[in-house]
Image (cartoon, rainbow, N blue to C red; front, side, top):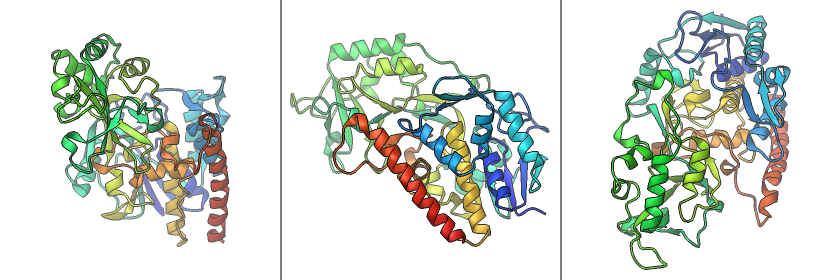
Length: 441
């Protein structure tokens, strides 16, 4: 007899299962692969890495994902333990032998006395304590069950990602705050103006830039008008963008007092105001091309990107609207969500949210207080973005980055900020762990 049902044996589900099993709870871990494959996976191993063998930077002093690694190691992460055990040379990055890694995760969970690994497809939301961690390729029946529970517009099947810029990297001597026709409070957008020559050069760069291709399982996914890649719009005509996301009407450049020839608008993306989303700029340009082309925009010549754009098939929920602060579905609190289906991006982030979901549920089952990690930590910053730091209606998948953290108080040198944030995070994690242990008794 199990205490908890976890659906999905990817990185998030595997990590959640480990945390609960180590806490003494019986876990039924349901994994579809073994009875039914997916277009992306090649094996039936748990925690299979589909796209990359790298967990990205392991630098905990200057990189947010490296800091997340350190925090997960401190909390007994199975995923990080197996990544370390199967590490291969990659400089400062944490790269792994993919087959050895997933085989190691599978063996550890299969051998755990508190884990029952069942190869089965689950099509309905469970009635008892459960974590859904089915990832971006959630099977259609379960996706429909989630849709029925959460609402028609709460589940996305096509992920149109626009680039996000760190606010401090925008040149406000060129750009300015203004809403179109001064609606709202008049300062809801940052505007980057273009003259005709700048627009024509930018338009040509979009057409010439190297694009990524859809993966096999995405090729039948149609474009929707609301998520049309900017380079596809550019190909429709020289003025299509000027009458679409780059229209300048109702925006007065304070340097000239006139409407520019074209405008790129950025909208605040998080409650802290540290991240700004490029409105309507979803794209299939390759990452290096995006950086080159987007830095042609006046005001963004030195832009630093928290996330670059993309367009691919995905399944994720509007977590800021649907989940509470401990990842429970508000309308059905016995169910938690974890991993990419919550709208986090990346292997490490998925596992991190699985770790938190597992620990939150373990505390609940033990009738202990749930103490979320503080927002100054990488875990807390990521959790905050998923459960309330972003606007629900425009919510999109996000990697962990320092733009999700609360700003440092006072003034500091830009070169020192990441190290200072990392040091603050270590102190906050230590204080939080102390509180958790006190609550645990």
